Image (tube, rainbow, N blue to C red):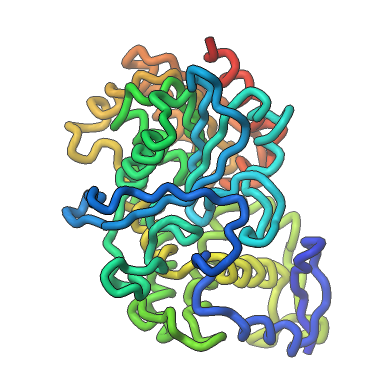
Length: 412
């Protein structure tokens, strides 16, 4: 039997034998997390003082915390040109730059950041850190526990977006930056942007939240719950204790399914229909596609994205970060949404995406409307794209120009 698969080099669908299609699914390491024995790549590391435990929202604490981060450009004399980028769920500190030893994929915002790009590193000093709980150099479930040196695994505590931001604050202080000129991020990165502006209003001059929300809705939580269940039901997840599993014996199946579910929410119906239609992926499928396991082209696409993630991500980190997104609510413990948002002093550019089914535009319009109503300088720009939630990573010709104008118009 022959299958259609996505070619890694070209991104195009090509034919593969059944053996070729499935053989790569059995050479997975138990985790795609970066480890200290791996090439460092472009990472730098901020190691928090051992005598200063990091307190978490949940009432517990972490010791010996590290954040991996990358920088581009040069910090000016008065440190007024610093921009913090906040990554989305499965992102990391590698916001721009080629795939290389230590970085299995190119930067997630390649084409936006760099010399003479929309965020021009001839002008701006740009920082991006891997969030706490992540798996690409920052302290997370795959990291060594300071007591016994074994991976945290199931011992890693639940964290929140506020915890991510407080960890970034420590990095900010270690870099000697008093106030960020701007903090920019999409999706979960946008959640961090809002939390920064609410929690530390004097530490940020402007913000750009993209395709995000003030709180996760029931439907957004529901999508995450399906993914968590697929991981929990994978026996190879082993309640989070899988790091010593043999090659091919980690929880890749559960994580792949979780990613496939998410990928459906990242794109729009029109994009799926236009790209794949109802075409079958199996070259020797029944003429009418009536075989139970005859596969459609869109299934090959989802398989591709599921299989890619397990090679560069950690299953426990996926759970921890996904839960943090579900818990996101800037109003929590702050007397309601209006009172929480009234803390924001930063001039704001909000970007939404017309076809986003995961974070619909009414959520970004709400952010802007609340800020304008309280007298904060805020503007909403909508990206007209068929690509759904991922458009902020795809339609750079629409995302980049308003970001560039906003950053420069607010720089004195």
